[in-house]
Length: 77
Image 1 (spheres, rainbow, N blue to C red):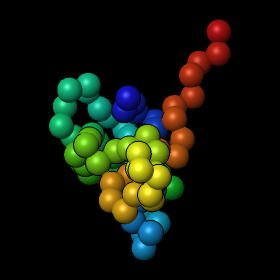
Image 2: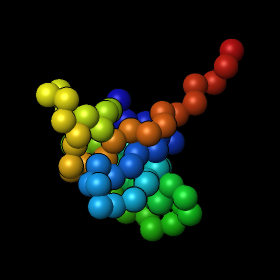
Image 3: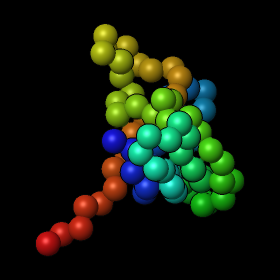
């Protein structure tokens, strides 16, 4: 499930892009993201490119899309 605050990294081994979800409404086709390091370069990315793991079901490394690096922190009771 995509939530604001999550951090994703590019699955392309030639890239080092890391992004943070800023805004997402469940059911939307796009999520608003920014660069995770600087907080700049705000843009929209299609949500079908976000993956929970950097590895496919077959066990091979993904080469496209973005893999989850850090989920949002859940508030402690």
